[in-house]
Image 1: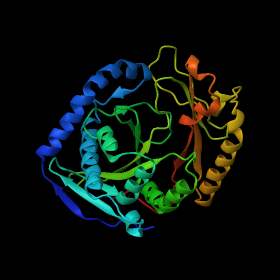
Image 2: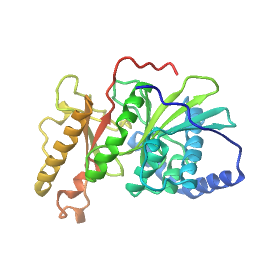
Image 3: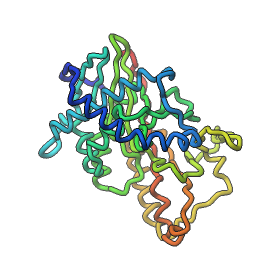
Image 4: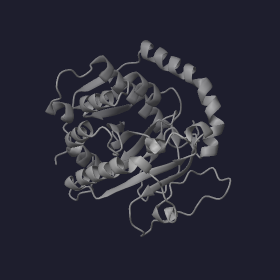
Length: 324
């Protein structure tokens, strides 16, 4: 597959309106942020503050995503989806010396709307209203992982070839979610590139966080159905590190799905069949245990599935480089 073609370029000047809106978002959420900081430290999430090595990059991501979302708000897609929706590349050049690319922007704008996600909320969470959060991952990849300040959205850096494969599958992915609104596939919300000066592009994706809300989650698991290298040493008691445990850590545990069992297994079959059709090799079931309040314990097992999703990882194919 060829690399995405260059799209229209738009120079963004400093906007008083944009600045005031960003400042308003920051002030309205500042009280909440202060209340959350102690909780975040206990959860092992680390604010990317001015002393962090990734602070400058994440500030660029925030400013770029604010402007990119504003485009979809000012020019919402209308009519039926087109092939151009999935191939469009918008590059916005910022006065701060970087450019942010938005890949398949109209397609993702439509998808976010179909999921009931307002662009205003998306912009407020990913824009400069509060610092991104970082956590230490047990993933073997060299990707960087971030959370929006409200922990609602998950950002992950990707290689160029992974992004190309993902975009090639995007029309079928959207179609699958339309046919199966209760799909266990992770909800992919955007794909972007970031280039500083004349440097190399960095690609990243945005998804809804599987582990949201995080307040009562006690354990997190990444299950692949195999035992090779599928053990994570548990964190010492009192450690702030958030660990995503694996198959061998789950041994001896069971989940009683009750009346949810039939649809859950059927949906898993549909989702795994879809991934096989795409020749996606690397995917897993993410699960979380959430402690229930007393008044929730009689509501059945439906609460289990708020944090259950497949994590879709694009197939890595040879022949595509990361030179751009």
